[in-house]
Length: 205
Image (cartoon, rainbow, N blue to C red; front, side, top):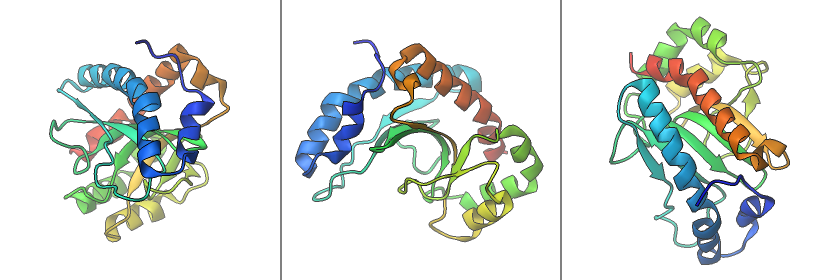
């Protein structure tokens, strides 16, 4: 199978009622694309970071009643899991696709990473493009553009609030033509992650 882009049907997956029915659609429509994209991204990041990176595709295994509102792939430097590590993410809600460098609440050294970012806030402001977006919660759709956010406030919250998170990257609307252009989409993903690699590396300092 080759990656042919994302279609409206992929996003409509999250409008399907019922856990079993939605999970079936995720497995049939989205996961095959994630496997292809994810392998390419994992290979690229392994080369760029000069360390082995591992692909994880969300299984939603804990869900017993409510169907997932989104699904994603993650690439991390740990084979067993990604949630406790800084990781790169690509995923879909019903109204947009997200491309994230994600630092979520399960990070054991979350406060230290946040403080490191605060100590180097000038670097973050320089490295993150103005049209990128930032979120404090991976489970919610909204995000704030870099040019509008109070970065110091967001990072302080990330440090001090147990459940606070820090995700930075791009949102792509479902009607953006780039989603139907596999080459352009993969180039955008690559460019986004390469732009964010200095932040990823800073988290490990």
